[in-house]
Length: 504
Image 1 (cartoon, one colour):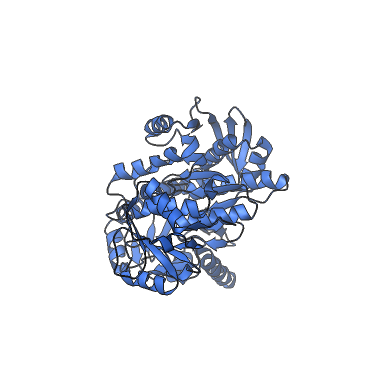
Image 2 (cartoon, one colour; image 1 turned 90 degrees about the vertical axis):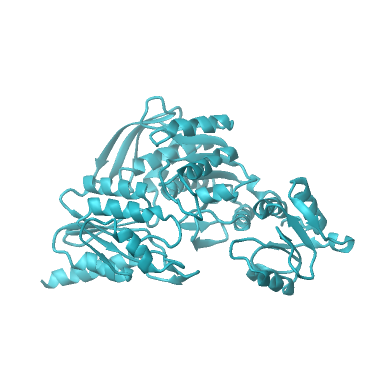
């Protein structure tokens, strides 16, 4: 149970942080005990303190909150309502200060792992989760919590994720749920936006991992340029005790220097003999990828069963994180071998082996490039077909990047819907299409594109179905509406293909 604090205690916390610019709390109001802190009118209950935040915030939201029992509000400017106000200079930082007080600094009560990078965050998080689960359950402890761009589990909530890193109060609620459930470890992806706007400000990760850096999320509403994107990623080292860095990544020397300047204990991983976790050989076998490692704690041959040569780097990251957490080697071996990430490099084949479908969440230049290169090596002699889209209103450079890469690598490309949101699909598709220099088709109906890719091509081919994985919704406007997952559609149309071939 969280301790309950009064309005005065919240005002004092804001003042100590240098955030409070004005207050209209009366002596009578100061003693009011707050049992709900929220910026969402749908979650208000009891005596609530309401936070006015967000680009889409409207004054009527505050009026609705007061009608539902909010006894005061926090904002960067005053509103003409009959309620005490706490005015602050930075509402996002205020959310952190108030949230940490409300949740009694619960983020300090779990062993936490934060993972950032342009690609590989989800897979690495699931490798770490698998390793930790083997270790924890062997000692009779609950499995670890995970917050990822795929799904969330915190001991209370199991849900499909719509955002890489939850907003501040949702993040603290996940930690609280995990703590109340007896969970000792939490693994999470940390996005560049979360780092930039301060969603993880005020908490310290026991281990932070920096996987790689490419160009992504460059847009007027995200990062104006690469320098801002990279600087945001580097903020992870301002909030961790041990930093794990991939030396094979671009800008590795700068990343390592920044980690050291922040006082992090450093663990490196990669293909250099000087790395803490050094991978010296990789071999592909029928039952997975095998690689040999030298390190102070883990040595010898390890293996993963998730396909994709690039996943060896993610496995090394998981080993570096496990080393920092003191996980015994036997659980690293078993956990890596068992690890699966829903929607990541899931491979399906027709009965005659002529059609292979790879379902993956690849969605930016780095992940597309790695996927194409790995597929060419692992499926020689099969032409590549790509089915993808781009999300609306952000990461605008992806449209050029993915269009160019798909045109350079594929025999045919289907440009389709992928969470268009509030931007017309026709605009997104036009932005992609002008960069696709190979035969292609624009078709908004994602299910129809998948059907055609599987059924309409006579040559042996491998279909790269990217961006959505096992997600069961599609973002249209501001809503996420039900939509069949790429896995469900793949299984449906492969069965149709098999039936057709059996009758031929």
